[in-house]
Length: 451
Image (cartoon, rainbow, N blue to C red; front, side):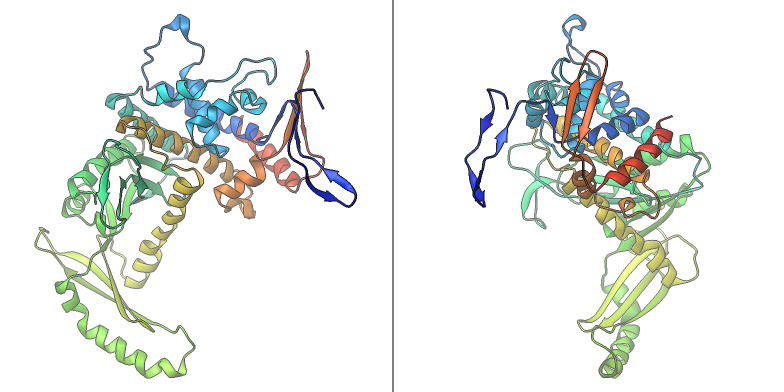
């Protein structure tokens, strides 16, 4: 124990031995597993992709921290569970973070501080944000080892509460609070396509179509022959979007809000299902439900043509419930269309949970909307690091499906002691820890991935 050791108040004694918690000045870190993500970031080239989109107004001779280093530090901190820029003031001397940015852990200079991070986040303008969005789309396209034949893109929003006078903030009656409603696009494998900051109002058909056009246009430049399917809830069943999909060869399957016209189509089958359920209810176990599907052509006044609508009618203990979808798919079986092609979008709720809760992407507290969009890109980059790392796990391993916070707590939060000498750097982990086997496996797979 060195002289500047801080001794905390004594804890409860163990037997006849008093216990004291101490903090010493040895070169240690609580995030030893983060070095594995350094290799993933190098392979994806995330920081360099985003830094290339920015114009650096600083004088070259006075630059201490390059743009790519600042962005890399920020996204690795988010991966390790430090989503706030203020955390950089504490982490800038952490030996593992310094090694992840190719600096000696002890003798190397400190990393950037919070004011530097904040200046970089507030630096980009709209044109640079557009280039960063293009870079994220390029990252998505480059993630495929072979050209895909078919892509299903899920669209959805998440609510971000705000606590100040941020640009684009708006009151949302459903959430009964002020905030943003960012729009996210994922594919069925869990890859993040793009995230766009927007005000907390239901997106209009023109707004959705503008984003879809840009995303689909970029994907078709890279994959000219790919079949693209859009999937979302009733917010996205807009006549502008469906007409454009039909005119440009895209498939779509969207939820559809019920109304009096649709209810007239299914009132007969609803009555029959209610009667059948009442007859069979006594003989069946608790929670028993009956479900039936109906397929018909219908349309709204704002539609220019009739479209295929599938109704799912379910009778259960809570009564009769009917849901609708609209699609241009030609699958003959309505049940398969609803259960296997539409309901699978429920996985996106878990992806949004990982993005918002596990990576804290709702830390959009900057005053300027452009700065908050930069943060959304950085959190998206952190999502890519964790998703890619998880994809390296064995297919049948439970690590392939664990939540991101579990991945962080078990594989990143490893207490590490770092020793630097003239000819080598030694990293010491605890002699006993429960994830030794999976670390060995993923290190081997990571070596093949990087090379």
